[in-house]
Amino acid sequence: MSQDVVADALNMMKNAKKAGRESVKINRISKLLIEILKIMKQNKAIKRYKIDSKNKSVEVFLGDFEECKAIKPRFVVKKEWIEKYRRRYLPARGIGTIIISTNQGLLTHEEAIKKGIGGFLIAFFY
Image (cartoon, rainbow, N blue to C red; front, side):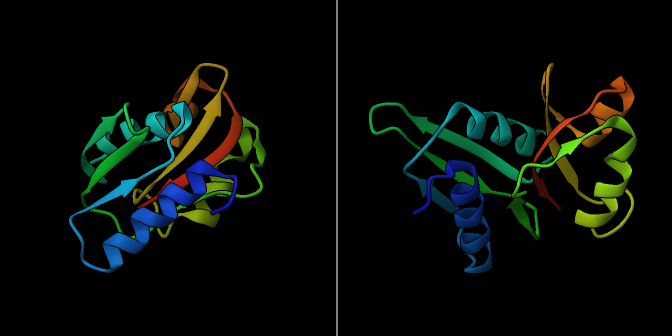
């Protein structure tokens, strides 16, 4: 395991989905990962997640997604550059979501465009 909790978790989710499993247990969690899971749940990429604070793990019930990855290195993106990165990481217009860390918290790329703010690219899924 590497030091990047988000990248490891998203990779475990992608591999479990390819293996045809319904859920995956992630043994390392962080606040950033929980916020990413909230956004993925809102976009129906995962069905639900259950946090076990005693064992510091989370069980994720997989939903409807094909790919999910962390963006490394975490590029700084200005509001004018979001479209460039959307074309780079997502397969087509209107398909998928890029998660951006801003001064207002984690936002999807659509929310960041509406608010007119940039930030750091964290992850994407579709």
